Image 1 (cartoon, rainbow, N blue to C red):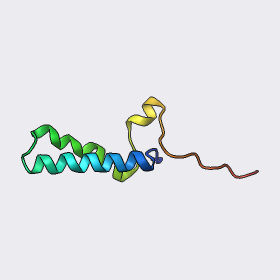
Image 2 (image 1 turned 135 degrees about the vertical axis):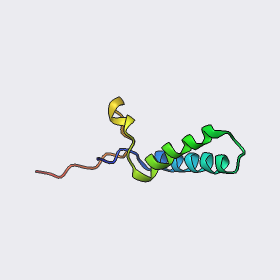
Image 3 (image 1 turned 45 degrees about the vertical axis):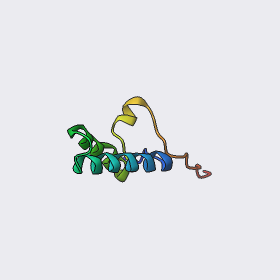
Length: 67
């Protein structure tokens, strides 16, 4: 599993996911708020399974070593 979720993307996923889960746990929003677990987990794992299907990667490019 290769890392494909970069810094800002990761922070946003964790923030939005945690916010939705907290709101759902407090009963402020409906059951759909538990969907916040998905962005929370992908942010924590630094991997989004949908990104490879779409050819996306939000990680910065690493410089190649000279051969």
